[in-house]
Image (cartoon, rainbow, N blue to C red; front, side, top):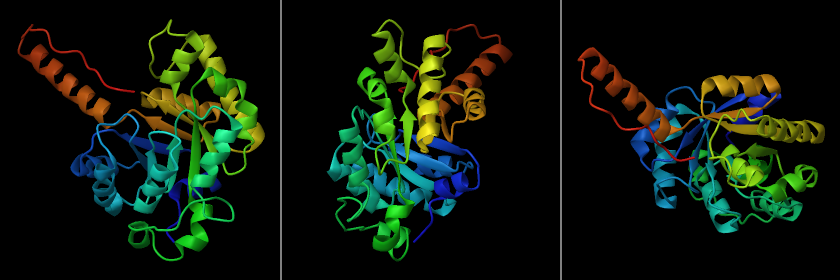
Length: 270
């Protein structure tokens, strides 16, 4: 079976540069995968796509040998198992609030006796190679998202749950939760309370012996997170990168031609 590049990098002491896809298009996925990311996940939760988009996106990215993953919409065994059968090696699950939910999630990504995953690796048979039944349990990475007050309250218990490989911080929803709507959601937080919360999650991961991942908006903040000790950082994503590059190009043209018409504001989802 194909080895998970994420686990190999971690074993060698390297952080993982993680890409993010929310546009349901195989060509944009192929372009992103060719840029040198270690791993890329398709965002089925908030992305402009569904499962019918995921499969051709995975096919388009296969040639780049990037480690493929998905953020599933919720703690749903059906979708978790379908992305694994499509060839995902890394699964991010949102809104894990209790150790019981973490245990369910860990069970869904692994075959018996370690878990409850049903066997039927339709595309994975061809994309990942032989002996999936015997090797997949050791290659899959399960990352639970910490993004609520309840999750922070149960942080140590969640992190200690068998079958969980790491915690993935969603700073947008975590900001919502900790500030109760007083601050707008977003990446790359500078508020002392948010940095304290982020570093607390990191410390719990280190103490428990699991991995810590952070969703970032810029390479600069991601590099800072790696200095803190994070094992994986997501740096922006396809829709934001497209919007940012297009806006910069338009702005530069306006400057060079003395065109003072107002352009549009760059926007994008979290």
